[in-house]
Length: 137
Image 1 (cartoon, one colour):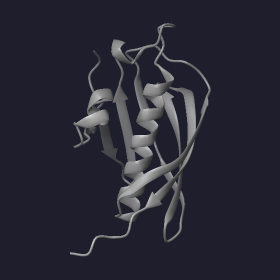
Image 2 (cartoon, helix red, strand yellow):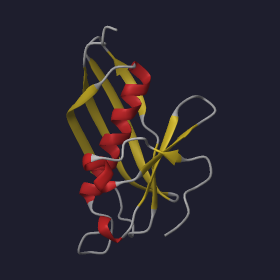
Image 3 (cartoon, rainbow, N blue to C red):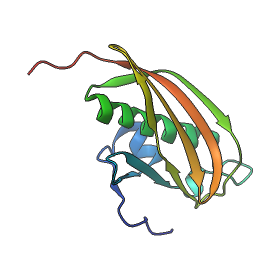
Image 4 (cartoon, rainbow, N blue to C red):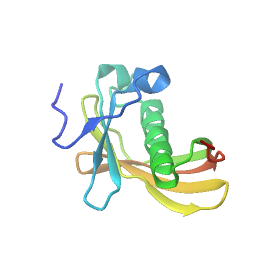
């Protein structure tokens, strides 16, 4: 297994489905935005010996959801998620996502991301998230 690039720390969520697919990593950039990372291995491959699309979609959904949470400081849930696959990547690839919040209303957040394996674009995704009411403490 390759080493995790410098500056990335484990995403704190390690249970449930995220824990099954991950671990996932994040790196806060100088502009305050986050870059997400994902070290794939054989359990993420499909019968064609490339990373299974479901593993990529799960990673994209998690990265975009965390982007929404960090940008809006509110819990959220995926309403729609659209993906376009551009290329395959072998298991063992380090995958990155740099999600961007494109628009926010009182109850919805619109976000997009691209997934990269090294220098190759492998998938693009857009999503709409439902924003839950802010908790009252």
